[in-house]
Length: 391
Image (cartoon, rainbow, N blue to C red):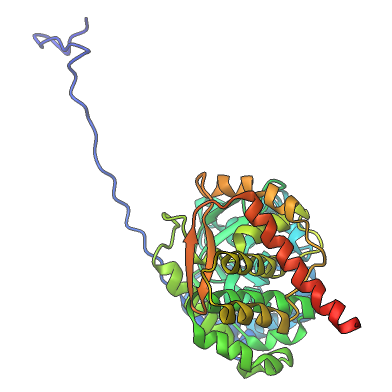
């Protein structure tokens, strides 16, 4: 038996006192979300005012660079700022991978980017997700800002601090919580959106409206023609309200300690649909729209939603071309992918079902047969109007 110094009393290994202490790390994130038409031309000066960064690096994709990069860089020049360095990736979900993530980390290192720099994510939801995750990992965390250029980016992906990349097993499997230092939104950038990217973004606005806002739902109903025509004021109002409501919901549980989250409406089944298709040929919002329709059919079959409200949700999806956004859906294939979603969500699947416009309920794991029946009812309702139109 060992002793501690001369004359010390031997300590029995079975009677040692437990040692320990408490670690408390305050964690609070606060940042501005600014929305203004033409804001892209002042990006450099706004970011310089809000963030004392020695160097800016812009991450974007090749399509956004062709469409909007010159407007962004011209703003830096007019403000008398050094032009930022540039990182580009291929457009689309195919760039949201661990391989591209690793390549970007290496490219930042070769550029000599350090912790006093700012990564500016200039693009859609893929760029916000990918760039935010890169910022979370590089040198254990550097600052980044989001300048979203798509509707889904502006009202959803750019706020909330959830950053990730996909894997073949599941969507957003590798990621972190890492908030930006600022989000600058210019609704005029939406003028170059194609129809599918517009619909994908509107799906996320419908999601938030069904969860939390009859007023936003009514606005999406009444303003459909103006929104589809690209009315900047109407788009700005929807983006502002949808993003604000999302952050109100997230503020209750910003780091997802409770995995029963209303914002998963449409996602529990939408994410596995994306994974089942290997992220090819389906936009995120399109998959969410399918998930919302199936969830509404589930609520309808259970008798937990009024028929008028169920019809209103399905009709609004149809107004925006989201009733059948991706063609025939392999219900069994999507359901088979739920095992990966269960892994991400702590071993349990909680389905978010609408009760009425502006209110949802969260139910535990559903029977596979019930899920497949809901997929079939959704498919039947899509086919029926087409048959009637041909009659």
